[in-house]
Length: 54
Image (cartoon, rainbow, N blue to C red; front, side, top):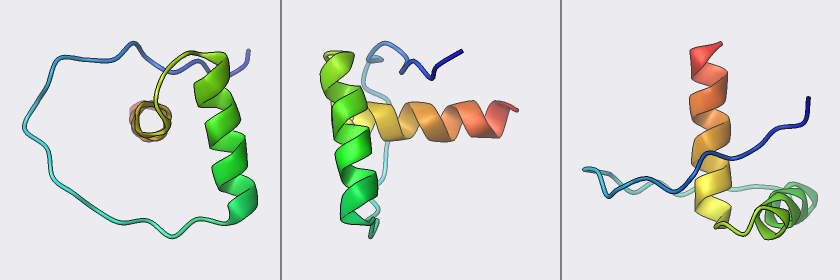
């Protein structure tokens, strides 16, 4: 089953971190975001949450 980002959540207390990603990885995440009508950030957060739940 392909990865599907979660719906955008209400604002929660959050922090800021910088990530250095390869151009190839950025393009893949941007494509997922575009296909799901959501943000790059939401895709990355959804992926991290999904992995931590496993």
